[in-house]
Amino acid sequence: CEENEKDIKTVSKNYSEYRKQASKLLGEEIFKNLCFHDCTIIKSINNDKSLKLLIDNSGGFTNFDEVIFENFSILKQDGSLEDSWWLYEEVYKVNDTYEVHVLLHNREAGLIDFIISAEQILFNSNKNS
Image (tube, rainbow, N blue to C red; front, side):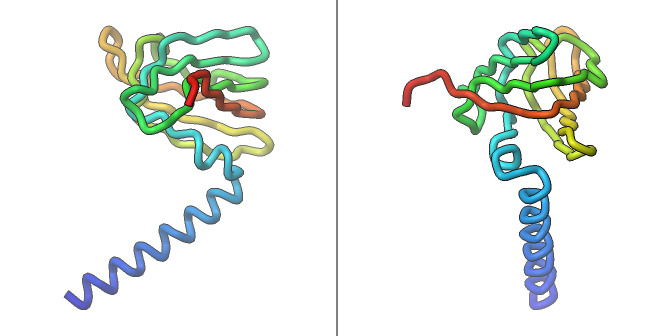
């Protein structure tokens, strides 16, 4: 039991340190807000300078219903984003851009690997509190 307790304290300390470093590297807003697990992408709007994803967040853990990728480049997209369930995401800082890796599930296409690079990521909530 004592050894397990020691291991748990070590892991907790390491995780806490990782969170601090990631928050500093990515910025607090990106670190806290880029979390759409269990949300569904309703629609994607691409205007060449930005990609806006409209989100049904009723099944998720966020109040945001839009995420906007500014000055973006799609690095990989295995299928349609629309009507896809957002499973997991990872975000990395690569030079002066954010690189976001998202695993989605679409009923027709199955698992979709979506990777996007963007200079800026914005979050909006269009619902009244």
